[in-house]
Each structure stands twice: as C-alpha cells, then as structure tokens.
Length: 402
Image (cartoon, rainbow, N blue to C red; front, side, top):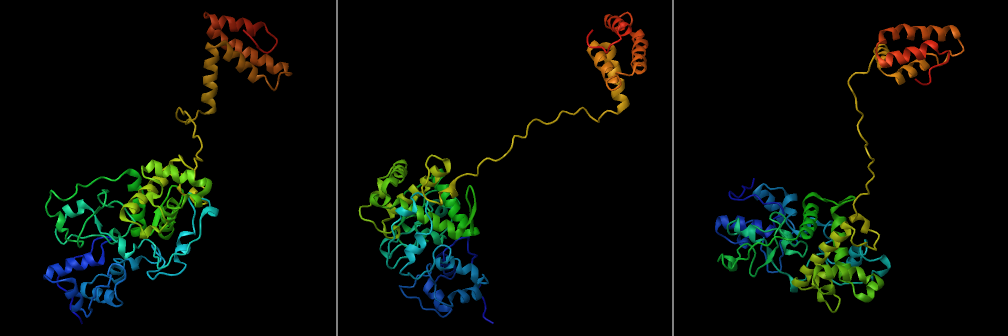
C-alpha cells in the first residue's frame, strides 16, 4: 500500500490544481515538478494542469492525499465539462453549437452563424491569457497564496468571497512578488451590485450546479451558455443587429464604454484583450440588470428568463372581527328582547319577525301583541316605553313605525 504524503493541506472551494500543488510542494521545500515526479509524472512546459491534467495524475494525487478524485478533477477546467464548455478539445462546430442555442437581446434572425477554428468557450487563447486575483485574498493569506481555477478565465469580474474586483498581476500566480510591498499592492475595490449579482450566479453555477433566476432555476450549463450568448450579442456588429442595435447601443451607453468595447473587427470574446473582455462582462452585467428591472425589453426568446414572476397574489382582505364564542339561541333572543326594550326600531323589527309567517293568524298576532304589551309594562315611565306601549296596544297591524 502506498503511503500518503504526510503534508497535504486541504484544497479550498474552487481552488486551481496548480494552486493546491504549489501549497503541497511548499511544505516540502520543493517544486511542483519535483512533486509530480515523485508519483511518476514528468511535466513539460506545454502541460496545463489547470486546463486538463495528464491521464492518471488525478488518481495518483487522490491516493497520496486522500482527497477524492472527483474533487481533484473539479480543480481543473476539464472537470467542468460539459457544463462550462462542451469539450476541452476544440471542435469545428463548437462555436455555433455553444453560442447559437439561446437568444436574449437580439432576435434569432439577427444572429449570424460563424465558424471559429480552435475555439473553446471561455478559454482564452494563449496570446491573451492573463492572471488575475483578489487583492483581499492575498492580504488574508500567506505565500504561496491560494487562487481559484476560474480566475484564469474571463468568466468573473469579482471575488465570490470579498466581492471586490479581481486585479491583474504579472508573474506566476500564488507568489505575487510585485505586491509584497504593501504600497504597491492594489486596494480592494468593491464591485457594483450588477457585477456582484452576475458573478454570484456564476459562482452558484460552479459550486451548486444550478442558478436561481427571477423566474426559474436553471441548470449550470444553461447559465454559462446564457451568459456567453449575452456577451456575443453585445459584440455583434451593427449591421448584424439591424434595427435591434438600439438595445445593444443603450447597454453600452449605460456601461460608459464605446459600442462593442471599441472593437473594430469582429473576433471571438476569448481572443480579445483583457480590457475588452472586462468591459464586455461589465456590459453583460448591466444588460441583465436592466432586463430584470424592466428598463429594456430583450428581443430574444430567452429574455423572459430575467423577468420577475408576475404578481398573481390575491388581496387577502380584512380579517373577520370575532367577539369570542358564538351566542346560543337563548342568549341571542334574550339580547334581542333587551335591545327592543330600549330601542323602538329594534322592537318593531322583533314584532315583525315574530309575526312574519303567521300574519293571517289573528290569534297568534293577538298573543304576540299582548306579550309585547305585558312586557312593555316594565318600560312605563320611560319615553321609549310609553311610545311603544301606545303603538302596540292600539294597533291591529304589524308595527312599521313608531
């Protein structure tokens, strides 16, 4: 049985494989190449462990550390296939297959089909690959500082923990030599609410596999394609947009950047400069915000995903006023008689009620009248009682007025 490495810090959520291996190797005072060589792997310069580690390496790392192979696999971009991207190997129809499934800002007829060779969703070309990190995470940790695998992709603008802007840095990730002097390290800048909301959803997709939108909970794969669709629509040429260009123009105006982030010739988002990628993602966050607020209406069939649920609740009305337990019949009659002694209208209503269905029965009417007269004797001396006595004693008709 192979003994585990005695020092192997636990990976943090979302950590890149190279970040974790740097921290393990640092515990022994060796390099990542030496660490990999210890388990039988010789890494060359073309090996991208954060994109697609060599076959079998993950299983060996799982044996040496006790961390599950599934979790280690999730520390590389290949671990997010087919959710984040269909395949780490570029395919001839990968762009159209990934980008043209959904429409948000533009109607489907305005989406031009393109073929982009050697294209992978969200994975920047080697010429424009940059390293970004959270300055607050660097402040709160020691070298080698951990970093997340998605920070190597133009997918998020802010740190999911501290909600501040990710900052570009030169040099290898994890050490940040240029930031060792506190005066040279950037101050954490809090991202806008629109960016935080967009990035929170992306982080939810990466960690939970689902995203909660105003109207629906969608699968992580749908969210990544939905976000990439908005990015592509914001980069569409004006001739491609047609009359719908007013939507994309307004989004760019709200973002404060030139249309298409100043891009003259169309090129895929993954091949753009870091500055244009950053501005386009910021515009995408604003587009989603104005769609949700109802300030703009998307012309694509999937724009409704950003709309809030219609308010179908009913007015609950006022609660019934209760005075305790319902009265018994005897109690109700007693209260009616007592009220009739004091109120002529109540006396009239009570008399009419008691003779309502037997008004043709003279004997019954006479008996009721006598009963009222006998009870009215108790009211003599009062104005109401005298009035009622006269009315009931001499009237042969049901009482209608006093």
